[in-house]
Image (cartoon, rainbow, N blue to C red; front, side):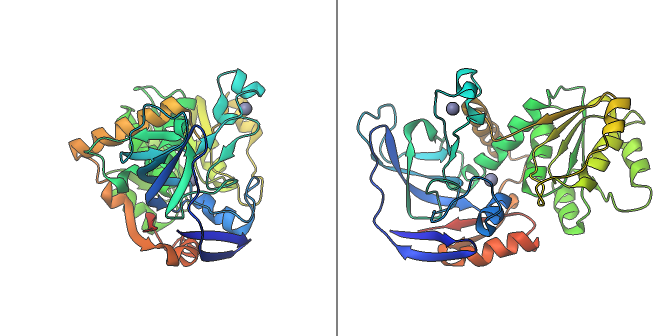
Length: 343
Ligand SMILES: [Zn+2]
Ligand SMILES: [Zn+2]
């Protein structure tokens, strides 16, 4: 099979390798589409804390079941599926506390184990989520990043009376906004300095303001009826993002943080957190049941046709263009999701 192998940091070779063979409890997936994530940029550059080389990256993928390992039941050969790329140890404190998504020995397929930028990939059977006919393979490849949004809003204890502010309109920020809207939030606002990304948000019907312009805070205050935002989801990981978050949050507001800072840390205005009694809540990946909920949400959105899910995909490219596409994502020239079609 053809596979994109990250040989060392910033070096991807397209290689001809043997297709992997599923072991007991595993399933072979013939990959349909794999999305390029912002974290693939960190993996490519060697700045992701758990990445290793050599590895076949790619953790956002859909595909078809091509073979079943010994002992796998309840999954039919040939079915279409979305894959949750997480493997848990089952024995650490997090796993014992029913929080296995933050397992101390978490394996992310496509980060520290071979992933979806290949014609085939092997995954544990419990990572395979069959999808209905009404959900396209392309949209199913968006399930993993959308599940990050689902989890972050659940971590933020979203309610229907919340005014929600999303900091950053990259793919994850957009998915957070669409998911908050789907969950019935009272209002959803985006803050994003990049005009191209604001235009994408506008096209999806989400109000987006430029935090770098004079009067931005007044605009945010107005958008929250002078009360501030009950829930802020910070996806940029930047000091500027946290500045906006702590200023625009309401008294006793909740700030969910899920964007990794590019320099390893960001600053946050602690005094403001104390004065306003803000809660800062970390959010990482998602649970199995949230992944299922996310697929149900995407299926409903696709059936209703009220969200232009295909419009969230900016281009579909061959495996040979992976390295150049990762650079495009890093430079921000692409405003929506790039999908790689390995076959
Ligand atoms: Zn991702
Ligand atoms: Zn564990």
